[in-house]
Length: 94
Ligand SMILES: [Zn+2]
Image 1 (cartoon, rainbow, N blue to C red):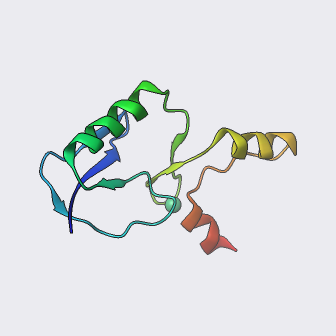
Image 2 (tube, rainbow, N blue to C red):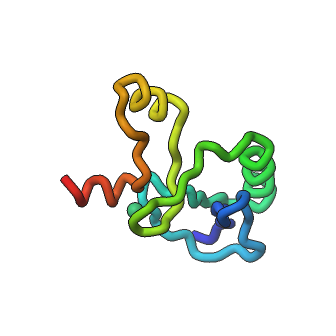
């Protein structure tokens, strides 16, 4: 299946201009695929309009991953450091 990819480029979300073969991504990846360009463009606008505090860069592998407000609150409530590694790197450690 062909699709348009949106991804976080370190500053904001961007869209691949050309539809390419859809690949499977890890669940925590910030990369998303859309079947048509219209919905991909809409998603880019939506993500860039909301601020980007939810996206963090993994300290270990450099991949971008989501960090939700709920997750951040969960850690700060327990006086724990908010994770700076992506889910796959955290999983590998345990
Ligand atoms: Zn990582």
